[in-house]
Amino acid sequence: MSNGEEAMEEILMDGDSFERLMQKLKDRSLKVAHTKELLSKQANQTKEILSKQAVKIAKRAERHESFLSKVTHLLGVLGFGGFCFLLGARPQDIPYVYCFIYFIFVPLRWIYYRFKKWHYYLLDFCYYANTIFLIDLLLYPKNEKLFMICFSFAEGPLAWALIVWRCSLVFSSVDKLVSVLIHLLPGIVFFTIRWWNPVTFEAMHPEGTSLRTSWPYVVEDKSYLLTWLFWVPLVAYSLWQVLYFLIVNVLRRQRLLRDPEVMTSYRELSKKAQKANNVWWRLSGLLGDQNRLLMYIMLQAMFTVATMALTVPIFLSYELHAVFQILKVSAAVWNGGSFLLDVMPRQVILKQKSKSEQPPTPVKDNGETTTVERHNGTDLYKSQ
Image 1: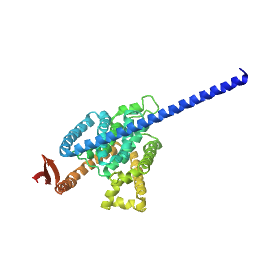
Image 2 (image 1 turned 180 degrees about the vertical axis):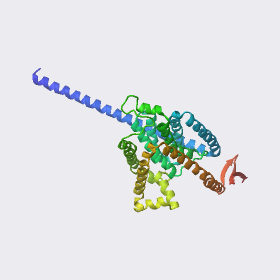
Image 3 (image 1 turned 45 degrees about the horizontal axis):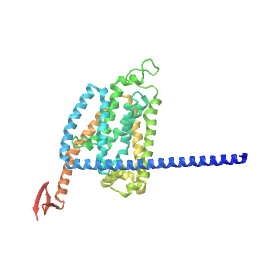
Image 4 (image 1 turned 45 degrees about the vertical axis):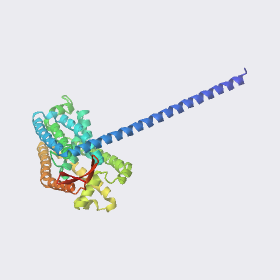
């Protein structure tokens, strides 16, 4: 065989190898695409199953609302008493109690909110902050800088939101109880770490290091305090604000426009503010109705800046920090009393009125049509 023929044969063999290689790559890409498609379908099916189960659980809970409220009230009062005892006897265990409460109640809130179409509330800053708290307490308990960021979140926007947005401590309502806990409990956790738990301080500042000072320590470098209690938390808050805007107002915009029953914080607050025509509604309209969302973001940012600035003197003073804890608890209890005495009676009257105004529901029973009339909570049966 001549050299030219051998060269031609080699070229043909190389061509076959190249074709086989391309075919293998093509087959592999098809397999990857098929696997991605299967995983996507499985994820969607899992999401649908979880959503359906959440709706079923929430519907069952609504049918037994009265009984569940009594159980919640009992467990809430007993839990509050146990928490107060633990706060005095073993304050070092309070962070673990907080983590336990978070892992129990936040999934339950997701189930309830999914049923009510309120699940976008779980993208709010308070849940973003509480997630960072869990990371700090469980994974990085010795990191002083992360602790100070968490302190700023807990005793800044979350703590003042409890007062400004009138969170109510009502033991018979799981929803209101969880709302109070996610705003109030983190501040108590970081209060105990800051003033009552030298073990955490010793872990942050081990003996023999240049950073070692007496407990409770006060940092002499005020710029260090300002950096980690104000500027860095403000950057972390800005990151959340950008992510929230992208998810709610860009990625999920069409979903929200299609279904006006799906609630977000802005929708709920603007709805209530417009109905009451209060100061928040008037302030949000300073730039015109078309810019109310932008004005709402600006007002929230100003609120965050002001409340984070207040965390610096709170961090430096035990007396001021203790008074602040009393103020927060008092506000939640006061709002709870106002709800029980002023709001709840009106809600009961409206519920009874709506039940009495419901049209008769036809029910088939042994071939006969029976009409169920609801009158003052009592079912009256009439055969036709």
